[in-house]
Amino acid sequence: MRKRIVAGNWKMNTDKSSAIALAEAVKNQLVSVPSNTEVVLCVPFVHISEVKRVLDGSSIKTGAQNCYTQPSGAYTGEVSAPMLRSYGVEYVILGHSERREYFKESNAELAQKVKIALENNLIPIFCVGEVKEERQAGVHISVVERQLEESLFHLSAEHFFKIVIAYEPVWAIGTGLTATTAQAQEMHNAVRQMIAKKYSSDIAERISILYGGSCKPENARELFACADVDGGLIGGASLKASDFVAIVNSF
Ligand code: PEP
Image (cartoon, rainbow, N blue to C red; front, side, top):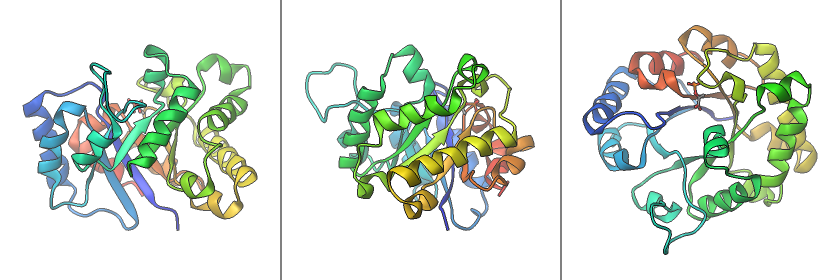
């Protein structure tokens, strides 16, 4: 059975006290985690140690939202995968559409980030997804295939197996527009077929593929019920503990 994952992406939100309060509220309200489900909070770098301290003793994992391509050195302002690992971080979001758009991260740069994350035992939550014009042009599946090919498909099966994929249609992120269950299932199934073709159907069946894009308590249940949707990457709704916990309880 595939691992189910609900990961919150806090983005650049919260200050020290509200980050601690939000982590505490999620921990307290999440009375029990559904079976075979991992819950992750991907928080701003500066809050990692405080959030980790709050979550210690719970099953909720701490994640980051990015890391640099190099392990250390003269890269002012960057944060490396070994640094994250030294704080007990277990997951890192890579290739989020906001990083691709505002920071011009390319598929090739993301391949380097995936490599260093894996070398440091971080689990990449690797985001793929098309923009609105690409969906309208009917090329959404080939866009995602290219993202996978250029950033992940050079990996050995052993390494690829450690990746979590998040399908996030860019037109659905933070817009209130959600992919229909048919659109989500079509893409998740297509991704699984790409993995089967590149690696094996056994690996394809065991990789967790999350949906992200205006997922909220009102639509999580129907999205998570799709055969190939194994959970969600949650932006806006992860900033309200009761909404995030309701989403976790939507399996
Ligand atoms: C995200 O940023 O990963 C995301 C899915 O955002 P939202 O849920 O706000 O659309």
